[in-house]
Image (cartoon, rainbow, N blue to C red; front, side):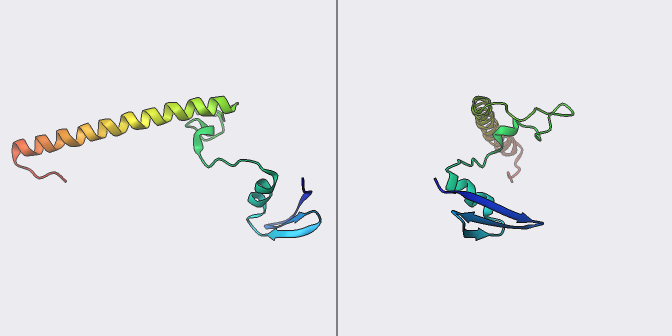
Length: 105
């Protein structure tokens, strides 16, 4: 595996791979993770519906990948159920509008 080294000062960063400059700027971390083979998942499921602090009644960050998977499955099911309810509500509103002669938006 290549040797990765990041140099930072204030808002400036540089990534060196095996002693040679690879990239600079804001993409340094992403590039280093990519070169190291670290998967980056862009999804908020690890927050479990909270903000990550675990304070003021919000859930803490998920302690395991298993917790993330379980939360994601539950969240996706709740979203699907909500979508079905919205569709039912849309149909009911259209029926109600038809009964009194209004046009649905």
